[in-house]
Every structure is written in C-alpha cells, then in structure tokens.
Length: 306
Image 1 (cartoon, rainbow, N blue to C red):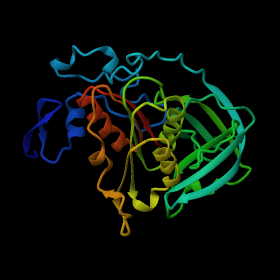
Image 2: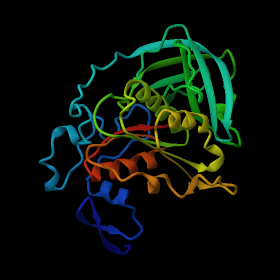
Image 3: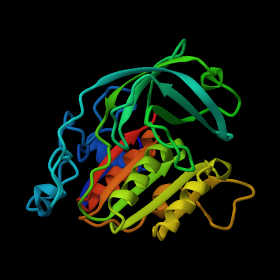
Image 4: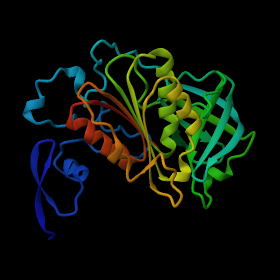
C-alpha cells in the first residue's frame, strides 16, 4: 500500500495517497461530482450530478452563488426556459487549418440553428462518429445566420478529422449541455483550453455586445504555443475594453513573450464568490477549474470537449 498523507481541500482535511492531486482528493472524498468525458453523460454541476458537498461555513450562502445548482438564477438574473432540441442538416462548405492542432470547419445548414453561445450539439459528419461540439464564430467574428462554425482538435500526425471534406453531409442535433452564456450577474471569468476557445469565443463576443460594461477576465491556454490560434479574436476583445487577457502554454521552443509558461490553472485570476465562470476544454482542465470555483463558491459552467 502506498504512503498516506493529509491534504486540506476546500478547508477540509482528508487522507490521500502521496502523489494524488487536489482534484483526485476531492473526487475521492465525494466533495465534488466527477466530470464525465463521454458525450451525453451529465457533467458535474449539471442537474443529474449530486451536488458538491461543502464545509458547513458555506451552507449559509445564498442559493444564487452555489456552483452545484446551475439551474438556480444568479442574483438579478432569471434563467431562460430551455431551448427545445432540434435537428439541422447541411453540408460542409469551408475547411481551414487554424494551427497544427486545430481545424475550423464551417457547415451551411438548411435552417438556422437555435443555440445560444456556449451551447453544444451532437454533430455527425457523414461516415464519421458523432462528436459533441460547440458552434462558434470564425476567429474574426464572422458567421452567417444559417452557418455552424466549429473549432475541432486534431492529431497533428493525422486522424479522423482530416477526412472531413467539402460538400460532406452533416447533421447537428442540440442543444446539449448547460454551459451557455447567461446575461447578468458578477464578473465573467472565461477559461479556454485548446479548441475549447471556440465555445468561449462565442460567449465572449456575445457578452461584449449585450453587456459591454460587464467586467470580464479571460485565460486561454494550449499544450503548445503554436496552437494559440486566436490572436485576432483576442485583439477584438481588447479593443472592446477587455483588459484582463492571459495566454499560456505548457511547451513551445519559440514561445512569444506574451505567452506565460505552465498549466492554465496556474494563471487564472483570483476567483470571487460572485464570479460566473465558463470553462471549456479537456476533462482534466475543466475539472480542475470546477474545483477552484467550488472552493470560493463561484458559479461554474463546464463545457467538455470530446
């Protein structure tokens, strides 16, 4: 049996094996619900998951600030009725390589998609397995009302995504998930890992138009600095008044001077209980941000990439 040690998670002492991360310790003790990576499985903090257990000091907080209850309205904000699930069909009309690890695919649909920024959908390109993707905008912010734009991670050495072709039939069914943008509330903290920037870009763009005075902080990360493909998008956000934008990468031999080194979670702003956090990316990054948000009772909406 491995050595054991004490670890304090969210103000509570737990016994864990040496080498365990805070996220693993919190999951093992049932302090947070696990995030499921499989499409269609309820995510942590999404209704079907059991609410996260809190230290007694947090139980007196208003319901509006509890991240384990995403269906409750934020103070001063009413939750909109859920959008009915709808099916849309179309064809692939544009394919563009944004970086070694990200490809942009545009599908032109026969009918306008009925999704809010940050919503996901189950997308099937003919002949390929169904993916859970978040429709977004091109990096310059452009999109027609009957288009669905996707930022899709790919293996630089080749994989199924590279078999997508122009005029390929596509089916989109959604919405899926509850990570969509909700106007109102406190500071908007947006966290994007890799292709997760697609969902975050849609949320950020909508928020700047709908709530230009709302405080926003943005943290964007990638495994390699070459996959930080969104500079045109970030320049637009800066021009509209977003001052707190951080870029980071785990590796990169020629890392630009404005790109910080290390994991994304090391470069987040200090979270507050009144923050509204949207995080999109791989399951480990999303789970780690959920733990940080829960530690201050900030509301968190996860968007997990396939």
